[in-house]
Amino acid sequence: MIGDLTKFEIIKCHGSGNDFIMIDTTLDEALQRVDWSAFARVACDRERGIGSDGLLLVVRYDDGVYGMDMLNPDGTHAEMCGNGIRCVARLASERGYLATGVLRSGGRDYQVAKAEALAEGVEAFSVDIPIRRWSNDFTFFTDGESFVGRVIEPLDADLRFTALNLGNPHIVAAVKSIDMELLKHLGEVVLEHRELFPNGVNVSLYELRAENQIFVATYERGAGITLSCGTAMTASATSAALLGIVEQGRRVDVRNRGGKVCCTTRIAGDAIVTCLEGNATFEWWGSARFDGEVFSFTIERYTTEQERWKSFVESING
Image (cartoon, rainbow, N blue to C red; front, side, top):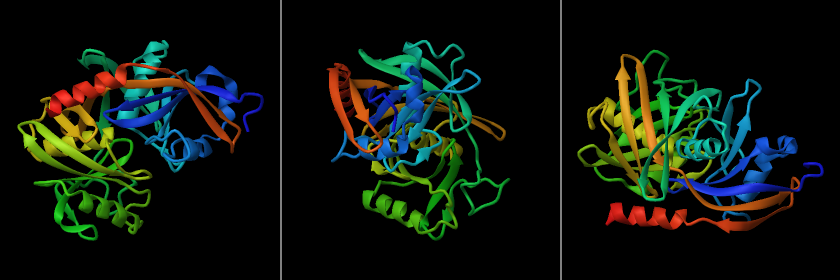
């Protein structure tokens, strides 16, 4: 229950086709009492609710830093979302929350900034993502090792995976051609091996399409196969740089079924930082009502941004 408050602002948005419902919880103290996991399960459902790949909450921490809390459609929390944080960065920028240029997600601080528009009317933001080679989410190798281009036997005897943590865990593999049925199979097999992936993992396949251009497809934990996953595209570009498939320090064009982003990976010893740049598109503004069980929403104002985004995607795929 949320007390006397029954109505609050919602924004439908997306990054590279990865669509979200976004809510600024800093606007009213009563929003702190909402059961957002329950809300996500209903609102993100594409049959019962609005339909989206996740819920983005703009939050403010006790030290004054603003940040993002992202929930998957099943109500679980995700530590980080590369496409989502760009949408949050845009709203935070427009509302004056970005004095430090930092947004927090999953306990980590990320540098974000407005980027050059991808095309006229296609707003873009960037986020610098520090990348770790190991985390407690991986138990199939030990801390201090580097799992780059190696086989994970229970998943596939032929694919060579790279394991990276971007605030959330990823395993990615380079292939000659992406097989969506294989990707679905890998995502489902992961669920059977909690001994290897105690907290689940995002699985991606990527292929080289041109010099410094890759295409990525992802099975997201808690969501299944999606049009786009920002951290997965970042992990794939980083893996490609580590393996020499693309050039380190150079801007890589990363595409997927939802559109494209650009990634630049910089490696200095054990330190890896990849800058992710891409759109932050607001489709419509509206309001929602939720009492913990009953959900309803109203679309109040469409933007023209989605049409511009579609035109941009058609231009790069033409």
